[in-house]
Image: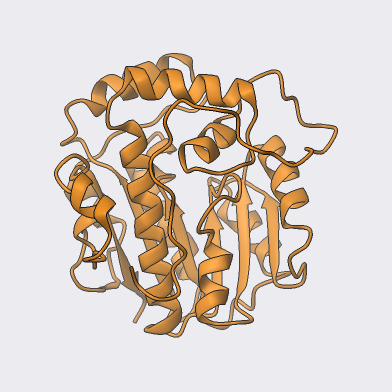
Length: 286
């Protein structure tokens, strides 16, 4: 595995409870949280029995779900390391970040470039409150978590500018979040507005599940029947459209397991065929 990228544990299977730090008092631990379920799937410790039970039920009912989730985290690690070391990016705006877990954006970026500044953003007040408590020991001047909504880019950028210098290059991280925007044209407009506010040399890191995923349609239908925020599958060409006007970093917009894979990563090899429908890439603003 590439030097500087922390290894990510093997896929989560139903098992004993993970350790967890005490949450802030406003966090309800009797109901599952989307952010904490993802934390469980990623092998994190910041989840509770109710989250693990919900996550394990979903994983059992939907083979390949956890592998897809973990593939996105492997891609994030490789892509952020590339941005820090090869593109020279020192600022990161990670929207829809959920809860910190193994291989966070700020950990990867600051390992490769000490002093990198990172702003996490989520629109779930519970996830933000918990994330802030977990990030408290980190340098608060350089790593923060905001309560804001992707669909309100101007307000989001104003809040982020308190930590980030928006006159210098910023990496915009949109990991699996654009599928939650109902209309494709609206999603493209949000990306365009955010990138327009960032200077030359800024980058977009993004991925989503494409409509080539036959079994994912079942997962999507189950999710959308109970979730308050639906997820929409888009074609690989539509996902590539988010990078319009940007210089794509080789190998372009591809299945995540094909984006600069770690040749010694057994999980990337094992999952390559299974998760070929999760598509993304990195683009740089001229």
